[in-house]
Image (cartoon, rainbow, N blue to C red; front, side, top):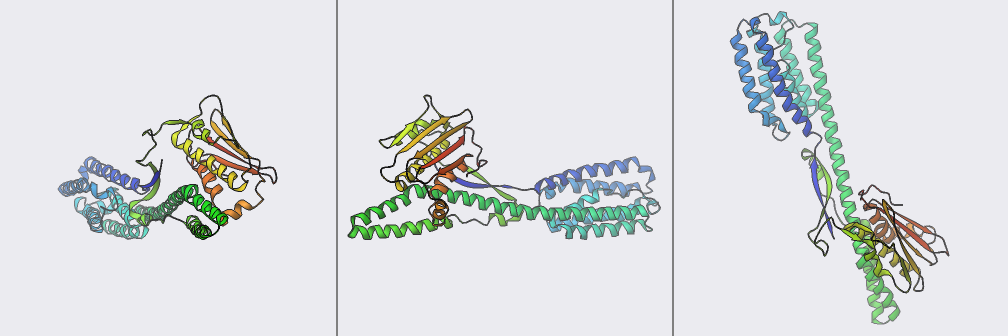
Length: 411
């Protein structure tokens, strides 16, 4: 079964916009209650009532505007701040003693919501601009501002700038996360394609090269061309097959997170999420030079997990045939543990010289790195290779019965 990568978006900024929407509604109710309980202090209560009615209508009508950065335009922010500033400056007209007291303004703490919208939209610079205008309006409204007035003004100014700065940092982190996740998705897709290529095309090209060289004549030229194509394809696989897109550069849409979908061309049984007996997939490898030892009862695994594990075993046996020689023998042992399935592939070949695997990987020969270790890592399992010169090689493959994704480590 093939798989494809897709991306879904997430945003750490969106919850802040939802919180701002709730804040505006709650502070509107708070401002109305303050005016209602203190109605006797207003010499011109009709001014307070008219403004609060306008404020309520504006808040409810513009709720969608503060639902996200896209809908919260510069024009809306300007009008919203103008409403808040108007309410502050109208307070002395409704309450003639407002300049001689430390009572709340008509919009009260609703004004902070307007400043916070600037912070969420444009960061700390926009927040500093809006809070400075609010501070100036409060000083003008008080006439002779008291220590409490300066304290409140400074508190709003510092808090709004701090929130704006946090938003900018969150956006930068979100873009970095998006890029990292996208690169990871592209890398994992490249490795998957590389495994498929190694298991099919590269091995065929290598076989054609060997057989052509052995036959000589025109076949030798064909083998030489196959060898050149094998080298070119290995280089392409090792340097990258899947370019990353520009999705992560769109900061307004949130981070991208990789998700894996099953392709439409599923297994022969046409179902997904089913289990397969691992023994049935490994039994065809048994032969005159391959001994297969299995439990007496089925070893059920998720179908995709079983196929990937069987492919890793096949890759290990291919390495035995290619590197251990035609006379080498191999043994496959399947162990069914309560939470883990262990498959061991052992041969009696000459073993792998120290440092040879790193050298092969540098040459683009990624059979062990991708076809074996890469597969087990994606299954949440481990692949451990033990080789002693002159005593053969043993590959131990462990996979959890409940897949943990890439939580496992590949050694």
